[in-house]
Length: 119
Image (cartoon, rainbow, N blue to C red; front, side):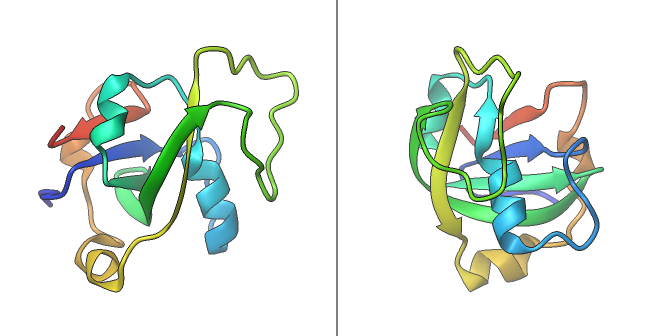
């Protein structure tokens, strides 16, 4: 599936669990990432597990990692220096309907967990 919006795919393979609720999925997807300046142009973050979109979030703003509150996630023992996190909200229903559950494995080449799309 081709993504047409300006976005970032974050691969959440290590942290995803079947049946995650939206709050937990949001916490997993929003940080903490080694990511470049192109992040500021992203409208959406696509949380992807094994090539399948599991969540889509509209980006409101980016912050240095560790500077915003997470509901159910801790980063104790994790080096967050030079990493970023975003705050946002669930994407619009039109975007959710268009992409949720779709296979975007064609974008997931290599081992980088952060992939820019149309940026």
